[in-house]
Image (cartoon, rainbow, N blue to C red):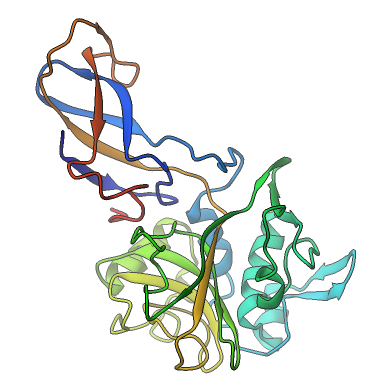
Length: 308
């Protein structure tokens, strides 16, 4: 087996769904690059996590206002008229409104949820997900991928699935509190520090005037390297590495992947015994056919390692 080293993640987390994969690897030691395999629910039209996060970040600094979704008539079937960013800055937006605004602005549509206008309007409607739910982007429709469903934060932190793998950057997270208020946000991925978050925001085109001490947290949250963008009841639209919902109870977490698989990584090649010698489709090196996998086969999906 070989050691896999993730070099960079410029967009969404890797959702290969397979622990091992077949490829043509060099018969000499060295390094090659390879792309992730697609999962069964992969939508080839999905945008990158960068695109989703950059759109959500246009509302940084907007106040929190319960019930505001960034659109007029969001609860009138077939009618939804976007508000300008300036209007949202004045009127505010709530947590699920930030998700609704971001997805609707980008052109997503869903079906199968109890309310699709054109996507679920709030946390209650996201939580009506079932096996028949679909998501459409740029004319391509796929089954909604539920990365985690109703997993208590006492069992796994919000960014982890049941098997310990990490949800994809750009995923929609919905926190359900059976005894109180729900919450929703967009997961941004892993960053080593607040400065790394700021550098990332600049790299995806977020306006410098939106990046300040009020909109980007100090990095002292319980989430450590895991960051999110949310509309917080006390802070408005902000980016932080906190882990709380709207109450301090053990909330049930669900996560929905809405971005594409797009990861570049390096793999150390090793000598193998075999008769099938060919040319790598990745880097055109002379190759021996083999099975390459994670050393201990424990990191299914290879999700959300360092973004840089």
